[in-house]
Length: 383
Image 1: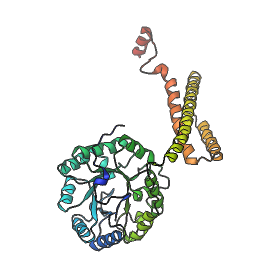
Image 2: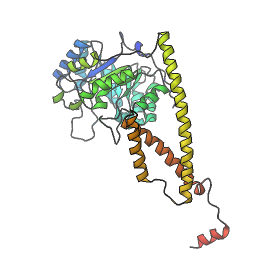
Image 3: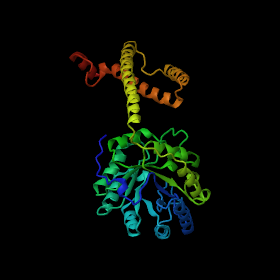
């Protein structure tokens, strides 16, 4: 994937920027007291952070709390005035953008439910034209990298150069222990497509529980992400939305204080030399793996031809089940985790099935249709 964005370096967005950039505050603005109390405690620990709160909440079902509305923007002004914290909230329409700009909100973000709709993103982009406000774009709910990239491009094309992506996880049929599957590989692919793009992690929405936030926050830092968005509430258990995933300001302090911030660059020549030596070994092993995989797929094609000639189905569930079980067992003996082996075998098996199916259908492919004579054609047409 190719992604070309015109981006202002993150250290030029705000004064005294340091890693990680911290965006913290409640999932939703609920009351003036809740907002100010939470903000005061966050500011006491991290005066350079950005205070976040949802003003309008896109909910799956009606008749649930859908945000406090415009009055929350006034509370955000009070937070900024009293604590000095910058403020951030989610926007889903042009009207939201206009109201936020009018009330002096410092940072906007496009939510996961909005990112999936190019019409909505374009409406927001059009409303942003002529401004210089930083905009974060969360990944779409489902793992569609093109939608995420497209939303970033639309905002950037509107003239917004202070732009960042927010990784909040993806919904899938199997999220494992997470509320939303991290799918770190998609973040890597996005970052590879545009190395200058700042990426912020939202461990609250990925984890769905406070217990997972420290692990996810450290993982994000180790993946060289530049910031964290963590839902923080003065009384999480009584929160009006997402009560299960919010932390207190004191818990936030512990999470951030315990982070190990590592450098993406290696200045020491000796360390760099050792890394290059180890990477050379990895390159050699990778080449050997690719050669073995190519040989395996060639055998899969032969199996496909044998099945075709003997009227055997491509998929044989009992054999596949045995393959997975044996692979997990061998992998376990070699110190390889079960999920890794399952994922690897699924990728290999999917490609093997594709190759066998291709061989099976080769004689009846639209590109290579079966030969029939005119007599057969007429006979077929008479029925």
